[in-house]
Every structure is written in C-alpha cells, then in structure tokens.
Length: 535
Image: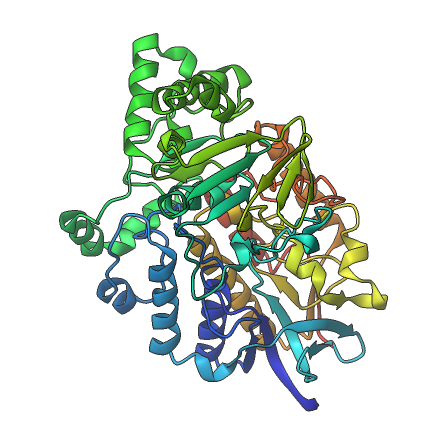
C-alpha cells in the first residue's frame, strides 16, 4: 500500500525520543507519523521488564522538562524509578499530549531509501505500507537491539529460555525452579537478587566481573521533591552544566586524588559509596583519567565486595580487575550479598567459556549443569544495532551498513554524510549513553526542530553533513575518548560484546556543556558543517 502524499517526517520509535519528537512536530505544524515495533509507547522501558529493571539516573532528573504542568503534577515514588513506573509515565505523556493517533504500533520500519531527484525518503514497513517523507528521524534508542547469543545447542534445551531485553510481559515465576543466568552486566546485577528470592537454585555464569555500587534506593523525600519543584527550571539548568547532565545537587569535587592524604581519600570514597549511584567516580577529578588514580577507587570497591561476600573464593571471583567506569558502572540493590544465600552459586567461565547447551542445561569445562530455565543476560547491540537492521540507503544507493562498515561516523551524532534529511537522536558521536538520556533527547529534538524550522523559512529542500565536518567530529571524539580511560576495556561502548562488530568508541566523551555549546554554535553559524540545498 503506497501513500502518494509526501509528509514532513517519519519518526522511527515511540520511546521518550520518538514521543517528544512527535510532540514538537505537531506543535510546529509539521505532519508526522511514528512507527513503533511494540504495541505501546515506552521504548527501552516497554521492552525491558526483567525483575528489578530500574533506571540508574534519579527520577527527578530522568524526566521531561518541556512542560511545567507535567513536571509539577507528576509524582515519582522512589529515588530511582522502576520499569513499571517509567512505563506508566510514558503512557501518561502519550495520553496527556494526545500522541497515540499519530503512532502506528506493531509496525516495524524495514527500509528507508533516499530519492535525490525529489529530496524525499521512501519508507517501507513490515505491514506493506510505503510512505514518502521529507525527513527520517531515527528515534530507535541506544539499547533496543538485544545481543542474542549463538551458543551451540540452544534449540536442544527442553526448558524455558529468556533474554533480559525481551522479557515476557506477563512476568515469570521462578518459584521452586532451577535457574541458570549467563552474564553479569547491569540487567543481571539488577535481576539476580530478586530471582534468587524465588528460585530453588540460581546458578550465575560469569565471564567478567563488573564494578557495581549500591543504589541506596528509597522513597523520595517530600522536602527534596518540594525543593526541586519549587524551581524546577533552575534544577534543570544546573544539570545542563554537569558533564553527564545529572547530579547537580550532589557534592561536587574537582580536585586531584594526588592532592589528598590517605584519610581524605578514604573519607571521600566512603562518602560517595554512602551516597550511592553513578556519582561514585566523581569522588576525584582524575579517576577517569589516570590508571593509578583509578586503581585506588577500584581497590576500594574490591574491599567493599570482600566485606559483603562471606566466601573468600566467591568474593575474589566477584572482584573486578581493571578500571572503574571504563565499562558502564552498575548500580545495585543487595547484589553482592545475594551470593551469601545457600541457593545461589557462581560459575567462572572466564577461562572455560560455555561450551554448549544440551536438552538438560549448560555444559562448561566438561561439567553439565541442569536447569528448568536459562536466562541470557547478554546485553545489547548498542547504539547502532537497530539502525543497521533497517535497510537505509542514501545518495547513490549507499547503504548505512556500507557507510559504517568500519564503525559509525556522524557529525554531532545527529547526521551522517551521504544521507540527507536523515537525523539520529542519541546516535553514535553524541553524549547519549554517557548522559542523562532524557535531557540529551530533549536537546537533540529541539536542535532538529529548530533546523527544520530554519529550512522551512528558507525554503531549503535538504540538509546533509559535510564529509570534512564529519571527519573532524569523529577525530575530535576519538581524541577526547583517548584522553580518558574509557576505551581501555572491552565494553559495549566499543561494541566489544557483539562478535564481528567494529571496535569504535561510539559515545561523545566531551560532556554535555561542551556538546550543547558546539551544537548551538553550528546552528548560529547557519548550520556550519552542513550543505543546505534549496532545490
């Protein structure tokens, strides 16, 4: 079915990015269609329903700022919002701003091909619909394509298998069951304590131990909520000045660990541990820049783990080597203490990886472990996975797969050379996963909408990133990353968890203030670094 009418924009995805894009589109008088693979809004928080799924940015910060009424009337219940509460919030936004009539649910975009002669995109869905549009806005999310493992014999296992990123909506009851879970990343660290409370036996297969700090989650303090809501605008602006876009009302430290004595170092790290959350690495300014400085923080966490886990051998297996914050820091509730339970065991597969699955369970190091259920907590094909699953073709038929064969290349994380009128929200080359995502989503969408308004006013048909601007942005991003410790370990920031994926550090490390300032300057200079064609 082909719709001959050319609409202004197709938006792919109805998570927080897609919903805000649609809201701004409608408010600016643009015509737009949103396509969403799920049957409801919410994006990440629609799909990720595993036990314990919870945001690691505080709820008063991980929320929209574009509508004062929404900020004032919505009440979060906890410091870190749970998946059900975040999904409820997403549904409230969709209903309150009457977004649903413009969203096609249960519909996946399968291709988007650019036609240079008309400066439009032909978008095709899995429902057989074809839509011609001026702009493609990819709100596909950074963690929306699961990394499905390819273990030998998966089909042979006679029990149930689950992936944390595709959890059954009705939930799973593990009461009285023997459960194996492969992976110890964030989703596993969040879910293991809750699964352990149900399961008869829980066996965790760990390849690489991860650093995790306590969340110290709690009900929100009424006085704190009142303080924030008393001047939410100032609170948001303070966070926009923070490197990651959050934590402005928490203690800030910009001094070097080498300027502190041992007592100060210990007290500062204890203070951060007691505070909980992602701010731990902000104890000193150089924890993310110096291996020697980072080692002090790493050993502090290892000592905490040894103090929480009764069995010394298990404790050492749970103690990560390497660098704190080089992989995404995990935030947990009772994760390490869970290994003190009689029904929980840890299997180290670092030297002897999982060999295969059998009809009964998992084989590793010539030992078979029998299970009723196996959970794959193997993460995501982050940042590029969903984009590259769509057949996106730009000028001269160039596919995005071909363009990004050696790794993703963008200008500002918003656009890529050879693909006019295609925008990515929280794309590679933007702060995205290193930031408060909703804050950066709003900035991305506002920038794109200002650009579209500029083009409409100037009767500009297309906008495309210049190759030299793209190269300069990629080079600058690499320089910033290489100044830090972040590229030094095999993380999903680099795509290292996906076999065959190019090793490129994808997020922009330079921080929110610099990134926002750069985007503003580009726009103020008549979209410097872009080519604008009037016809």
